[in-house]
Length: 79
Length: 79
Image 1 (cartoon, chains in turn blue, purple):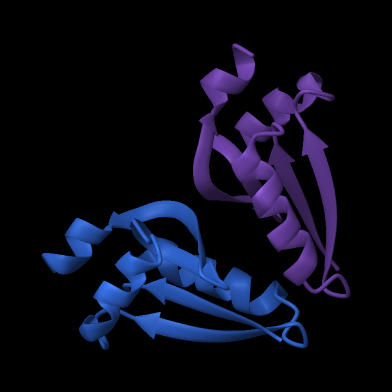
Image 2 (cartoon, chains in turn blue, cyan):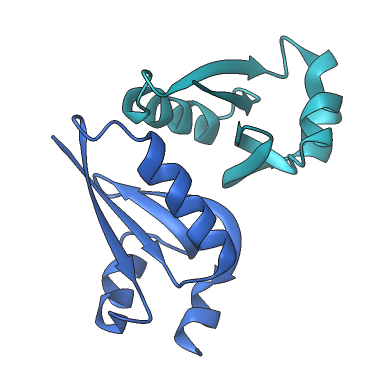
């Protein structure tokens, strides 16, 4: 089972991408965790370490995939 | 069954994203077509009409999702 983490910050693009990802990913192959930076700001550093530069982003086995460019990590940090 | 089109141009980011998408999307819920602009340049206009601004991109029911920013559409058109 692969581990994927979907990082977002509640922006409209994030919510839309989350629906798409959660609706179409094969949950029998990938275990998905959703992290909202507004609720878990302590995980921003972890995301940046994985290479996340903007949200929404999906990190699969440590590899970041940026989906659209809703908000930069600087904007997330500056709230 | 949802229809998704994965547009790419053969760049390393594209190939990596394609493997991820094809490996983890639930094929029982979504029918995926892969379009390589190098092989099908005539489909660039169709992608742009759907709002594709860079590749790789996944268009699900007409909604574009840009994955990373491997190459802009201008770079694809200029070869």
